[in-house]
Image (cartoon, rainbow, N blue to C red; front, side, top):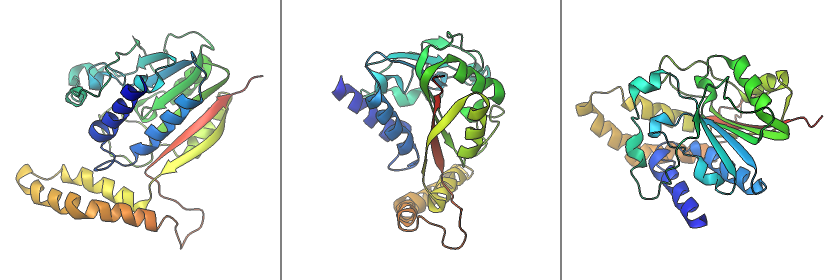
Length: 260
């Protein structure tokens, strides 16, 4: 099983998130998920709130938690039915472990029992939820006392899957939302800097060019400048002009429900 899980993670890195060639920010998500899985007791209940219909109804995260009681709640909006599984082609890979979602639900009404989850993970979903108050309340409701919430979100992202794109949080914005529902943030991590942000904007800008004009610019960018920008991010991680300033691509937050 461990070999299968490693193969699935390699598939996620290379084919879905393309962390070496396009979207390095997703390394934060994958690193965090692995750490969470390793730290959980066998048989713990893990609930993942995700959008599986984009990938043909399979959970990308379920194989990471092979030793757990894993529940994938598909939180795709009604518009996903019309758009179809346009990322399904990615899962046609022998390394992909195809585990279907457990149930369809709303981000604000999962249908799960109160205090039934040891860990709730929300990978790249929060910005697609319209009712933020209801969403955070639902996550707190299904967490057991002492249970953990993990959220991974972009700080920089184009408007996408319109109109189901509602909000961009900072980690402190999420901390304020967690406090409202009795969750205490324990850890904040981020990934990337301004040069990675520039590289991400280039990957998006290329899609706006007509196909016959795009090819030479793609070669210009991916052949040389992407790696240059990522190297600059590593070399210059700190704003030397303004204090208390940063420019990450993405961040993650881990919070816990009080035992009392």
